Image 1 (cartoon, rainbow, N blue to C red):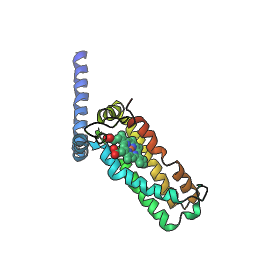
Image 2 (cartoon, rainbow, N blue to C red; image 1 turned 180 degrees about the vertical axis):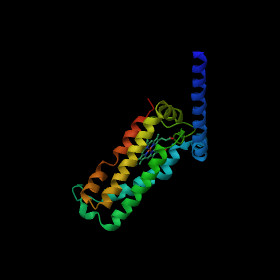
Image 3 (cartoon, rainbow, N blue to C red; image 1 turned 135 degrees about the horizontal axis):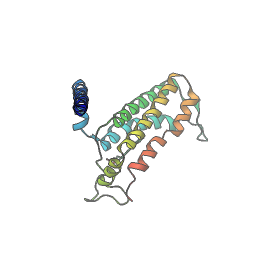
Image 4 (cartoon, rainbow, N blue to C red; image 1 turned 90 degrees about the vertical axis):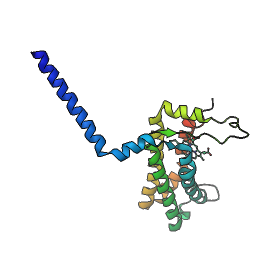
Amino acid sequence: MEGDDMKRVQIAVAGSLALATLVVCQAFPPFSALAEVTPLDVRKAMIDSVNPAALQIWDVGNNAVDDDGLPDTSKLDAATLNSLKDGATLLSEAARRLSHAGQLRASGPDLVGGKVPEGVATREQIQAAIDANPDGFRAFAAAMGDEADGIVKAIEAGDSAQVAELLVSFDGACQSCHERYWYVSQ
Ligand code: HEC
């Protein structure tokens, strides 16, 4: 008798779980379906979005220095800050796409004479590094998004000193992920 009651409880729990799953899936079908079937091409994201946004940011950073190469906030005029804000906003958006991607697909380097250039990771090596820790990859992307957002916020707050400081350390977001997920040839 007691055993039967227990079984009924278990079935009821299993039933409501299944229902909950069904409700969740029905509520978000386009999003979950899209994330499942469309892998994000990491190299394409770098070339089409991340790198152009970074160039726009570097362009400002390289010019906003004095003769000794030290940050010079007097060179951060309104037009320059506008351009910087655009670049940082684009980078933030690109970073969020990477950090929220379901499947991540590496394309690997262009072949030279049919071969992967020496010292460069192959598509398979990059893919293996991502597959070994995709959440780590997403975390690096999220960190890059946070850096970009930090630049936007500092501009909005009118804090030129903070902007200049963030420009100096900005490359770190690229480097740390590249070391872990791109330069993986050995
Ligand atoms: C979350 C990880 C991550 C971050 C952050 C990241 N990258 Fe990348 N990047 C990669 C990976 C992985 C590859 C190799 C992609 C492939 O071959 O599929 C790559 C490749 C590239 C490439 C080479 C594309 C080619 O021609 O093969 C460029 C350029 C690039 N990244 C620029 C940047 C810049 C600039 C930043 C910072 C603003 C940055 N990346 C931040 C992971 C990252």
